[in-house]
Length: 557
Image (cartoon, rainbow, N blue to C red):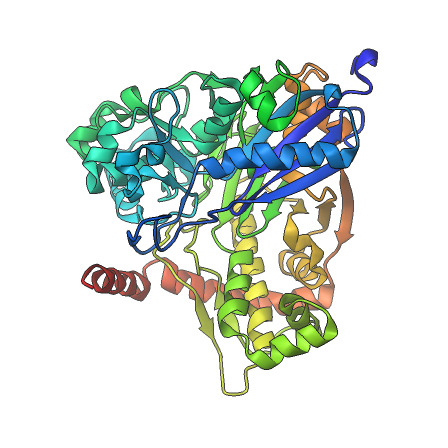
């Protein structure tokens, strides 16, 4: 880093599922000087549109794009104020986003939901990553790609997710052709927010590769798209294709308007957009092969680098330079983790437990964790499948749903809570074993996110996976990762690896496996695996049949 930049500061902004988080970071060593969080006013739309009595269907999840701009207006200035620094010292800003979160826009970036004529049309709104209503379209994409032996399919573990760009766009076309006809740009939210900061649209290499089926410089060809739907043939050319920006590069400079929102100097570097999970690897300097990063929150995303290209069944994707230049970046994930625990607490915990937690001055989650921690492995007699929000890896099927086996009249809330924690750990082990069997071995698990505060959960993950757990110590891991990329975009470091070595923050092997607990979990994992394969690999299609019955019931009312 140049000596005259020793006092330089960066801002990283992480756009999550429910809120945006900004952090002010010192370029010299990655020290976090101030941070702020802004909750999205509209949160996630799952039932109706704001201001309209328009009912949403099963598995819908939408957002309002202006909520993202409000993060820039509120969280960034507040983070700078809390840092107690002169904003003139900030030389770069970078952002990361959930993915695949899609914004349908006009050519100038105006979201269609902001047009009066489309304010009551669900398909005009942002489709959040966990919008899973495009599963029928994803199924057709997968079936056609397999039949045509499309070479790109193996790069995604053999299946495309309903969360991704093509499935969601095809759903718009087939369910609301009028909205689809007005779409001039189909934009990842990660790129849309950078567009608002710089005034220019640059498509980031990470989203394009993992979520947009861009491999070896090519998207799926028009013939393939036409076979899905003739009106879809020109989708890439007319709505998707855009110059690609590499990770750590500058997408442009902060405009006067964006400077007014953020309170930062106009003209500073704005980094190319990125995905929240992938950018976090830099925050822990976890960029070497064998180091898998698990970003644990409402869901979990697993990312890691490898020296060689391998085909991993059920992975979300492998992209050359998808995490850092010079390595193959691998991605997998679990669609529900923290969301599962929150759903259980919200819907299944009786009042006496809530009163007890309040009396002890702790949250219901903390109270249940304390009770669950008193148990020995297997004491509750339960096994669960962590598919309450579908399965992202390795089955890539969002028609799947949660299962609990072993419940009796003696089963207590803390028993189920622990079983759900264990189920998510078994899901991570399934991913790790699949990667290892495919020639991408995992030697260390780096963890970041809100769930790292739960010591029981962390120890269970270490025991179940038989791996040491290292903690990325930043309170805002993705935002720190973004700030590291901002430092590169601003020219303070030559590349992301160098910046991560200086600015990354991690404590190694904080949790290590307990041999006795690990042995007991091996036995439980075999039961999980049997259930996993029975319900997820064709042994019993009851979950898909139930979803079909549910959809018919909802649409007939």
